Length: 219
Image 1 (cartoon, helix red, strand yellow):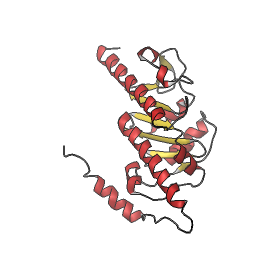
Image 2: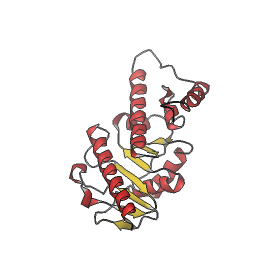
Image 3: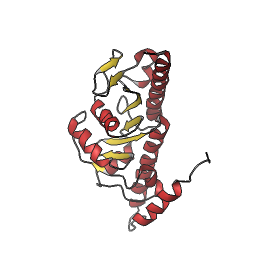
Image 4: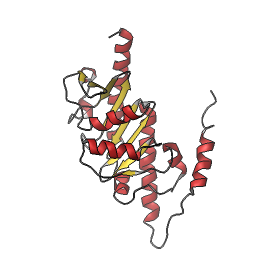
């Protein structure tokens, strides 16, 4: 391993730990639930199983190859490793965030697709689907998730939580936060007696997707 590759892995691991701690601080996970990963070349750095995030440091790095064989560290990787690897094999994602966010998980028990309550859905590639339930850590769950993620950067896992991915840890995390906020918004609007929330049409969402292509600072 070259010094440059080693530095990239150390930097990515710091990001994985920081993002995992952020999910806990922001109330998107409880205890050691949820998990975070980042890809550096053919190595996937992933949070370990059952270890509190505030205890993780540089010496606790956990890395596997794309087949799931451990190549870095002594701690066992998260039980949701198949889920993370499925995303990396099926996309050009460089980071994956999985949480048990309360509002998003609640919505996962109610709908097969998050209603178009806000144009934030465009930031996730379109209407967010709910993957059918399967036991955590299984290939079945990973396969269900991949189907729900088709042309999307985020999905719900029924009775379980959320999965988002992106080109960076910050973008993957931001998509998780947007998804949780959107689900909370829909639940709030739906709870008003005698009223049904107005929803966007697919055409209105497509207009937002076009507008977003020019979003942000030029260059």
